[in-house]
Image 1 (cartoon, rainbow, N blue to C red):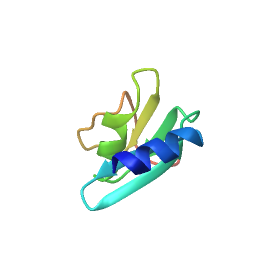
Image 2: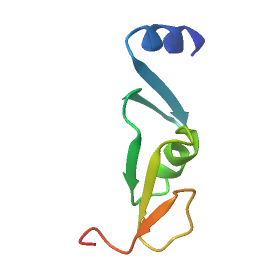
Image 3: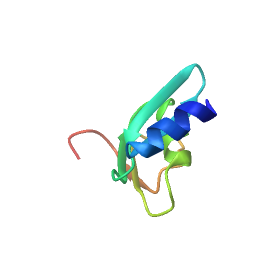
Image 4: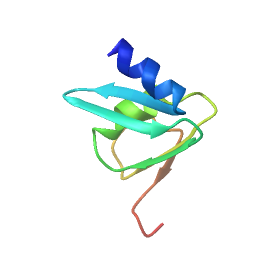
Length: 71
């Protein structure tokens, strides 16, 4: 995993390890929307400057909430 992180960071990518999942994202992206429990790992892993938005009514680590996708 450390080798992958090193290689990814050299390309401007960030690795986010979750439960049986590995997400690769651009380090310049600082916004995240999610409506699934698997998004919680991403909300927690993003820097404090990131804008995180939970879609739905469940408790979340996201900073902001939308009731539904139409909102």
